[in-house]
Length: 100
Image 1 (cartoon, helix red, strand yellow):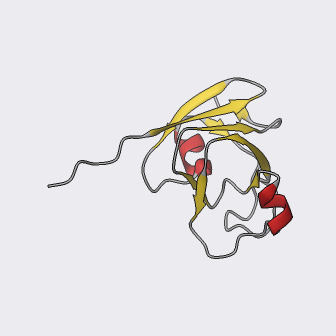
Image 2: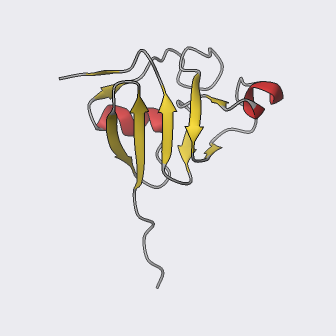
């Protein structure tokens, strides 16, 4: 019997929001569950409304080719609507806000 993976920590700067992401959950889904709204529109990795900077940590994408160029990926840009963390992450999302 294998143990369930532990939730990972997500921190949103510059406002200092912190929440957990469950295994298999996108950063956008985890934020919404925690009451944090990240910029979004299409939710499928094509519109780029949610494009933000991954300051530290790592993610994997739930789709084969999200709308981020190889150069943007190398610079740390990600799409949280289709990215799930594989480690604790720190994101720079200037327009994030609390829903409550």
